[in-house]
Image 1 (cartoon, one colour):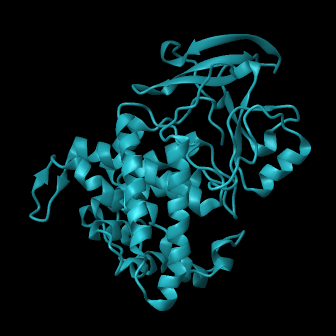
Image 2 (cartoon, rainbow, N blue to C red; image 1 turned 135 degrees about the vertical axis):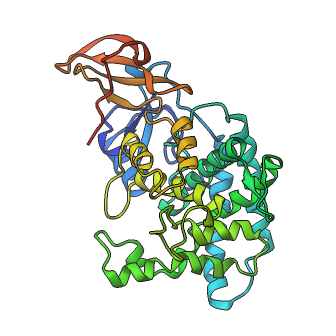
Length: 373
């Protein structure tokens, strides 16, 4: 199967995986259904970015799955409940209900278990959530990537305790606090006017001032909730930058909590690879390069090193063009060869379909993938 953007779907394409518009409801489209004009319009209205399709060209190609469908759906509901309770907390000053917090913790435990099972695998994070609006998808994607990175960062580089001692123990014990913070890292956006959040063009200086209030508003929403101070550190500081150019406090380097440094990479990567009101999603490899090029300026170099060695810039099912003009689909990604995947070539340089040929780019010097601008 291969992942096709909704606006590139053709009439007759066969859906390979169930597509949900509501994580609590029935599938919008079930696997096996053929795409029609009306189905394509329904997908657009539901803000579904892409659909997995089955065709002869992609037979035998399987996506890299980090989370099970059951966990995706339960996590999406937990995030939705947290954001539904947030406005009441803002207006009344009441605590976020313990039931909501407990469900978030339970969901984080599920995600941690599944992330830990894939700790030695390459990550492809282009299919992490059912469609139910940008905020829910973004929160789940950031949580999954952030937990994956956080686990690897602490295992490789350790973490500093309250006495400034470098430790490598109790890594898994720290992950729930990181996960809850990642789930609700953007909850403070509930205090930002919708017309700013959904503006299709650049923000004015005044609008940016309002937007930059959301980390501290998030801390305010959670101030009396039964969540760890480490979770609040993620909410407060996920927009801080390694060089001190971020917000809200403009702190730099190791003064930014390690969890927030992890969250910063996960947040920016998913934001860039998602459709927004003001721009279309970037190709995965373009966002991947953006993160790596800003190591030591925007992002913590340790987190970027882990990101570079664990996140696939060309996930299986991705259409690619090679430097000799031929075109194909990424079939497989090896954890130790992330930038040189196995590609199934299906079109020649003129665009004519040819007998499928599988090429291992790690063994073909001089032949590379041409990245989209």
